[in-house]
Length: 347
Image (cartoon, rainbow, N blue to C red):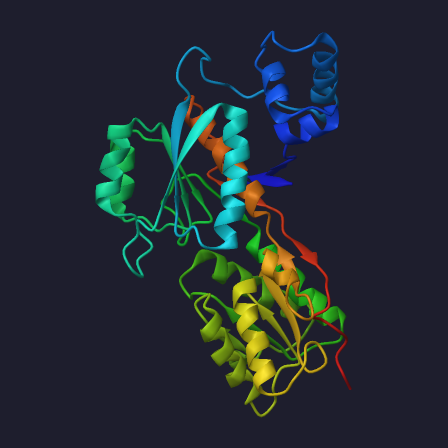
């Protein structure tokens, strides 16, 4: 379910889903959507029926006689599974829209998260029609530059809350924090800690707020010493976990605000000869592939990264066609994926 500007609407199927339903390839389904004639009648019938059955929305496309439109995707790094999921979502949605994508990575100043100004100037030179920023933090002057040159752009999971009017897509982080904490409460835990990312990051604040809200609703006392920040870093999460274990009354469970940091939690427990979940139940956030590789596999909150990226691309296409989205913030629902890292509190 996608929530836009406070209103919930169902996310439509992608062209890949339609192709699977009709038993054809994605290029063949794309030909039918675009009215191409080089498709067998029976194949066209199957695809058309699948389009109608699934409620596929035919989105505005560029003139097929012109070269494909070009959009830029700016990612912080290409070396993480997060970026892989984002790329997958953008690639699929761009194929549906007849777009080509230029991917840029490592364009940020060390520790800053902001794209270099020189890269922005290259947008004009290569004729890019729009930009997707993934986990980026733009300066006021960079926002102004994009507006001045009338380049449509969408933020994917922005680090800080964007200025008014800037379109962004993210996950329901508060909902995820509530869901993780309620899961642990349901297992009998009351001494529940949280290891968050950056204090200033929008997603961290929302996840911690959800954690606090769930504790308050359950009538469980919130302990300031149980709230730690590790900057989404595995090593820092390991150190914060050791600090929690050294408390006079250590937690019996911890909500870790990213799967990457959960790796550090596991390392700290192994150092102390402790086991998950016998000595500490652990819930992560993201549902990255590595969450399934841990021993035991990590219970986590899934945020739909590929769907977030695809939604951002579709919003960008609408903006490139001159349509302004009704709301500036679109949130996709999170859900708990229960595995082996959580268990009932021990007496």
